[in-house]
Image (cartoon, rainbow, N blue to C red; front, side, top):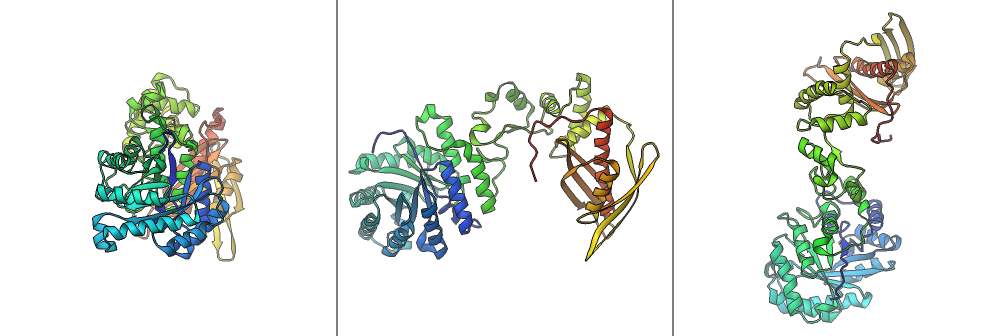
Length: 522
């Protein structure tokens, strides 16, 4: 093979990835993922297995027709009907590849195929030749190659090359190989197979032992120049080699591998999120590159280091994979430095003694509460620095009316801190929404509700309901919480708590400047 330093990224999210239990996609979803893969700049999209079902055929044909840029590939067994079906589905593609496969390991020969070695070789050759009749670009995979006898593997590969294969893929179909062993397979093939220099060697690894990425990188060190992988590493059983991991390994450690890809790495995170949303397969928090914690730091020592210089604890920039920034997660392991930085981002500039008091309260809260939000920090600062401040507004009474065919309405009476009472009414989408709208009319404070949740905090028919409301006002998030056996009252009290926080800020002349972090749009 040529001595180039480019690695072909062969994405099989839509074929092998979709075989992951529960990950099936419809036609429109497959097209959406295919567009994302095109924008990611993968070299090859394996769009599906056309013989598997009419839906798979339709998806491959639609992707072949619409997606320009990458090579569009279809999978086929070394059977006449499979190959013909794949060729038909790929007909609209400007750049196409037929990928034929046949198992070669002893266990597959004996128990699955019930074929001799001679029959395996004959079927492989016939399959490659038939695919070659349809297109020049033909890939051959000896399935379960990692458990195939090396001498027989060499024989099958050599015959496939003679038949016209342009890419030879070596699958570790069941994730059995060790990195050194898998790399040695490629070395052995390059040393013993005639014509091996004319084809691209490819790695296709599964993650049953958690070694798919390591094995793929080992293959690259031994001359492979294509990696077959999936977004988020989804696929059969434990999944496939994760595209984002192998790509970033090559980028971050270019000093070691000296290899490059065409991938636009800034599209990795958005593509990961898209695939996760469409398949319903959530990305684990500690997943490399695209996991929620991949660029998150909670330990005080780590946070201090990252704030001093990013490279102390991050070997790549979050921006390089499409993330906006690192996350300094505030929790019980966090230190004063990270807390001060976050408070300053929120507009608080505290003295050392004030920070000490807030930090003590923060630690107590962190021992009780897993996630510390900005609104929690605001409440801590206000609670510590402004103990005993009077509430601007107090709920005296309310009445709601709602039902089938009735416009929900609310009448509310509140008392201002100076003792004056105010009454008003409003309509809404429901009784709680009507209460919220009435309270905003009375207080004159517009607030956009970002989140509202009700949960039971006790048992029985008279269980207390806890209402939590999060709103945005002038670029700042506020959170309020209240409990009552009446969930409408709990909601009203929680929302009024938020309005009191805003009113206090307005009265104190501390109206918030826009937060530095973006707030999701509805």
